[in-house]
Length: 196
Image 1 (cartoon, rainbow, N blue to C red):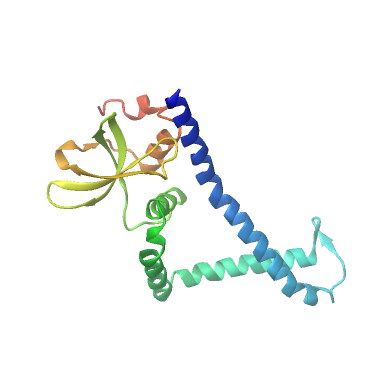
Image 2 (cartoon, rainbow, N blue to C red; image 1 turned 120 degrees about the vertical axis):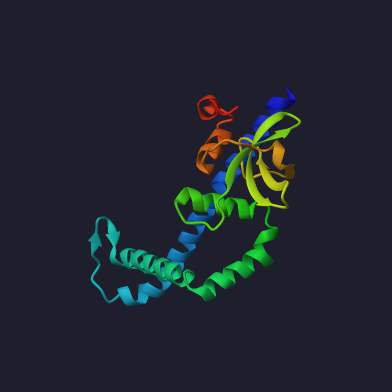
């Protein structure tokens, strides 16, 4: 019974962690749309009331402005000053948000962005047996820091320090391992065939 409750709780929390960024994005876009609409409304009032594909001119202009702002922000984010500012924010504030660094790296890999640090998928021994882990960094010649994600929500987990001899390399991509974790291990037979 406790195991079922634990799975339900983990699944529920995983759903919240999956939906939270999407809801936040929708709220931000809606707020941005309404702010820009206040700016564009006085200008658009001089235009004739025309609809294109079911959208009024003011809605089209607001969407175009949001698109231009996002493109401009993307271009600014590529500058060295913006990268330094983001790095300071991440090191000073966002590093205290649980799982932020892991989520950022994972999302960069999933979305195809280049990341300076590519998280390697390994297996490490735990009290429950071998578990997927992500190699975070090397501490010294014999010891590594790894992140062991929970299932089905890989955004939570444990930071462990593991001896090199206890790490089993599996040659999986981060995306494959995350998909397997989210599906509570379904598909692991094919992924780990000839690797254990």
